[in-house]
Length: 180
Length: 235
Image (cartoon, rainbow over all chains, first blue to last red; front, side):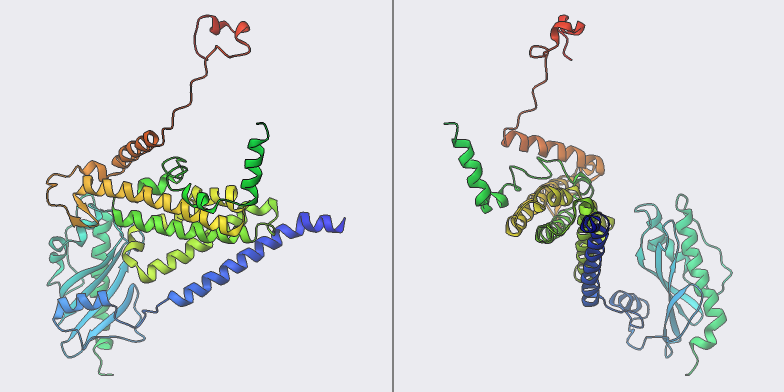
């Protein structure tokens, strides 16, 4: 009788738990083998964009312990008085736009899109150079920009990213370019 | 005469024909083109050859691993929880494939996107686990998984090749010079249905699979009492 109850009520969930445990163990192992921590490191894709912005990005470093709302990381080259903000904003998709905004001498010199999850052919219009070129030369958080019809959320996302970059720059430029 | 079929069946049960277990999934019992299973990835990722191969090989890996594990522990799993157990095992292997692809082949991982996670609910894998791996020995299950996976990959590869060549005028991303005006519809979802239909029809012709005969009134036991049968209408 006791054995019957065991096979009926206890064994099934027990076996299922053991299987879940074994699979989790396997996944954790594979995750440990494949995970690469990129925090604090300038990845290849970011490096390419930085090179395109200022020519030679070998003096660029990620600012450690810099925290600002909406900004993932800040890359700075003090000699050239250049900094770049890596920002992720919501477009039509959640966290749809990952952009790099390059600011030199207080002026935006380039906006590059690192990754985009927006609708192909609609939201992706805001990642094209024709659209992004309107942001070049902006030197204050008060600016106006065009919104692409049909891609309102994506355009607003991009404008939001630019204003986060400009606001953070204006408020924290002392911290960013401080000697220490 | 009457004992002949019995001897064949017993012989088959005693020594499984490993070669047959492997080869059957490729054409004769091809899961996609004959079994019509796994239609979602077949239509969704076959716009390019790269996506097709990525999906096919990922599925094949999961199929082989899950078939092996399930056939090894088939006697330990109680009947009442066998389906959740299979799904957990399959989902585990899918996660492993996802992690490995994201690390070593990021372009393929991005191309497949959410369809990589959806391998978990691919009915070919659960189907083989339930129909085959839970009733057969590990080696036969691995070969069955490999054969079915190869059949699936082959079907996706054919679809991907046709759709990419006709739809975008390229193959594996390489431009084909003499195709000047590609039929873009074929690379779109609707084109997937067209291509799949044509391929299934061709495979049907090759394997000489006839459609089921329509049931008529001639052999119906209750035709005498049926009013429509007198008018000669099919039921």
